[in-house]
Image 1: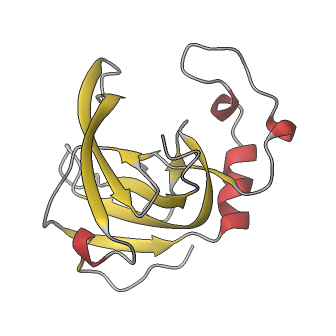
Image 2: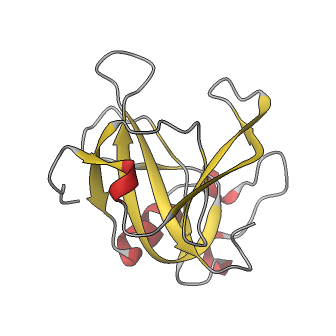
Length: 145
C-alpha cells in the first residue's frame, strides 16, 4: 500500500465531509452514540477528530476486497450469524479499520458497504506512537445507512 504525502487534513478529503450522530461502539466494545464522518454518501462510525493532521493512503478496491475475504472474523456480523465470504459480491469493502502494529497495514473491521473508492486516514491513537487507521468510503445511498 503506497502512502500519500503526510500532513493532509481530514477536511482535504476528495468528497464533502458531513457529520451526524449514529449508534456505534467505543474501543471497549460498549455501545454508545458516536459521530459519523461522511465523505459524500459514505460513512464511518468514528469519533470526529476535527482539524487534526493526518496521513492518507489510497486503497484500490481489489486490494480492499482481498483484505476482507482474507479475514475469517470479518464474515461474522456483530453478534449475528456468520456470512459466507464467497457470497460477498465484488466491490464490498469494510469501512472501519483499527489500530495496527505495522505502519503500512490497514486492519479492516465489520462495517461493509459497496464503494466507488476509499481513502484510509491515519489519526492519532489513544496510546503514544500507536496511530489508529480509519477507512473512509464513498458508498451507494442504499448502503450508506
